Image (cartoon, rainbow, N blue to C red; front, side, top):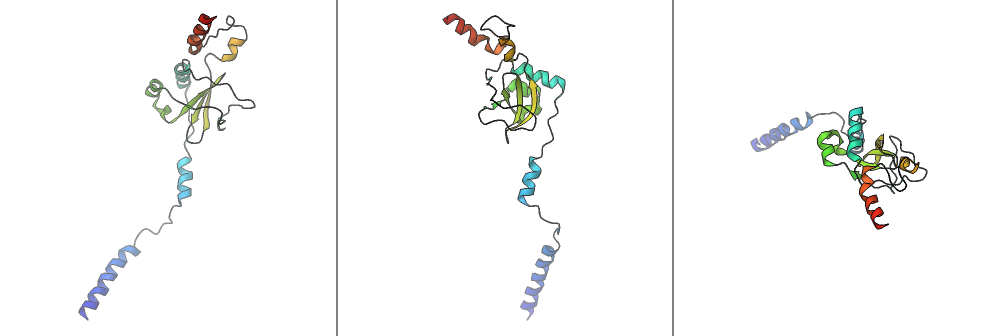
Length: 158
């Protein structure tokens, strides 16, 4: 009988802490995911925008803007465009950009969230490609320093 009473008391002692636990509702996994996806919008100062322009001038990754694509913040990047990682020197200068990629188009630089391919900033290129085709540079040449090496090689072959 004593054993039965001791076992009953032990069960009660074990059950009380379990009943006293937090009774707040549990968080559903899909709610947690939705909350995690909500990042604050990227707010770039003019100085940070210039730093991005300067750092990406020499990036040899310019891509043709797809037809019927208008670069706007919040839009998805078309799958035809390749995302490139931000250059290390730029990340060292502006650590907030570490979590973002970029796309260099004919006229714009797109800062992109690689997790969902959403555009978070649109920055005009320092030397847009269209400028070169409007007669501001000699035929076959552009003002874009990133293309200087390629054109010099082309001119040597001709």
